[in-house]
Image (cartoon, rainbow, N blue to C red; front, side, top):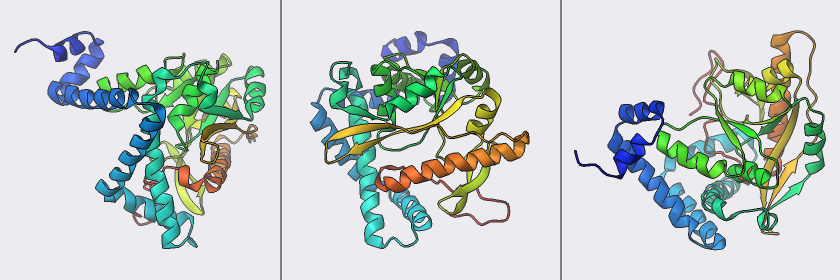
Length: 325
C-alpha cells in the first residue's frame, strides 16, 4: 500500500488512537476527518459575518434534510409548551436550526479570536458571581447546557483569562475529536472524557478548579435519576449532585445566549445553587438534581429558541411508561 497523508496521521497518533482508527477502519476514519477539516477551514477563511450567515444557511438546509430531528423537536415542544400553537413551534424550530448553523460558523472562527477582539463577540453578564465562587477555593461546578453557542462560552471564558476543565463525550472518530479539541483548548481549556472521569474531576475540584458539565440531556437509567423537567419526568445526570455533595464545590449556573438586537453573545453567570445536604445521599442526589433541572428549565423558558430541542430529552422513560419518540 503506498504511503500518504493517512499513514502519517496514524503514525503520529498515540498508540490507543491508532488502535481506535484501525478498529473503525482507516479509510472511513480519515475520510470523516478530511470532511470535518475542510468544512472548518473553509468557513474559517471567511469573514466572521459571512461565516455566520453561511452556517445559518447550513442549519436551514439540515432542517430540510433531517426531518427526523424536526419531529423530535415538535414532540419536545408539544410536551414542554402544550399551549404553543403550530406557528409558534415552527418558529422555534427554525431558530434552533439557525442557531446550530451559527454555532458552526462561530467555531470556525476560533483561531481568529484573541484578547483584543473577544469583547466584540462575547460580553459578560454576572462575571462577579463566577469570580466570587472561584475565589472561595472549594472548586466550582459550572452547571450548563446546550444553550446558544455553548462551545463559544467556554472558549471565550478562557480567552478572557479563565481557562477551565469540561466534561465531554468523545465522538467515535478519534481524529475528529482531536481536531475539535485543537480548537477548544487553544487558551488553556482541558477536556475530560466522561468515561472514567471521576478521579480527574475530583482532583480538579478539590484543588479549587472549575469543571463545566452539560447537564441538560437525556441520561440512561444507570447514570441518572428522574426529576421534573417542563412538567415531565426526565432522566437527568446525577453526576453534578454527586460531585457537589462529595467535594463541597459550588454549583454555578453559566450559559451563553445570542442577543440578536445587539449582535453579540452574552455569557451569563448566575448565583450559585445552594446544595441540599441532609446526610441521606440518595435523597439528596435526587433533590439537588431536581434543583439543577429547574434552573436549566427556567433559562430555557427565557430563551426557548436557543436550546437543543432536536435532542430526545425524554428518551429514557420510567418503568412501565411508553416510548415517547
